[in-house]
Image (cartoon, rainbow, N blue to C red):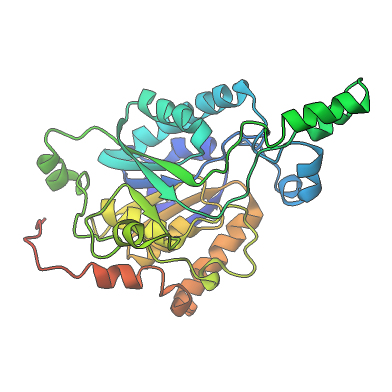
Amino acid sequence: MRNNKFINKIVCANTLELLPQFEENSIDVVLTDPPYFLDKLDNNWDYEKVSNQNNQYVIKSLPAGMKFDREQGKRFYAWYLDISREIFRILKPGGFFFSFSSPRLYHRMASAIDDAGFEIRDAFMWLYTQNQAKAMGVDHFIKKMNIDEKAKEKIKEKLNGWKTPQIKSCFEPIAMAQKPADQTYLNNMLKHEVGLFNTNVRIGDNMYPANVFTIDSINELINRAFLLPKPTKKEKGEYNDHKTVKPLAICEYLIKLSAFSKNAVVLDPFIGSGTTAVAAKKLGKNYIGIEANEKYVKIAEKRLKELDERPELFSDSMKKLDERSKVSPRVQLQIA
């Protein structure tokens, strides 16, 4: 198989250039968090430039990611349509595609995935409470108006509390798409070992899997229904300076729901610091990671090495969820 040279490796490459090398109908699950094309943070974004942004940038302008430009969504859609078409080609029939997004670009992402041939089956919502308020006041602009000070003060008083239209974002949408099944779902599962969801997985207080989850303890009702284990500081790694590291428990949850075969291959075409690969390896699945930034590749490889040498660093992410998942035995699908 052409994929063998990529199995259980993090490949430093441009995703669109590498995906055509993969064998068609060969991947079980794709789980990824792609660039969102916000403030030019697109597929050509520069690591050093992003890392060096500090709070002074917020004062001078809108916070990173909040400048409104209709062309961002159009560029993102066109680029992600190409990505999604390749993912459609290499996924097995019935294979799942999970793609994180931002609320304001989710429609573009879902449309690109849909137009590539996928069925949009659902959308997950990652609910959280801690996030920076993005709105910007207009006092700075009022000061620059060519009017007298008294008039400026009247405008400030009149618009007190009114800011640019960015509210505090407290959720992240994740598109859940599926490549159309080969005949029925049962036939697809028997033939390709993918296409159904594992409802033995539990969330919150031994609850049926849901399309909402949180790692923040919010209140008794939400915790009972949607809580996943909070990530530990150790699982990320003190050396890991990636800006948007995803919680390991979330990646494990999605993989446990969708990856059936003991030889399942989980692909992350924008793997960043490697969380998807760590989750897949921890669950006994194969992984392939693609990342254009060499620094992140090294971080991902270091995390994977730590999983072998110091598994206790990652042992808490799904421990409680696994304990809650101990339900009465059910008839399991047996595949020869």
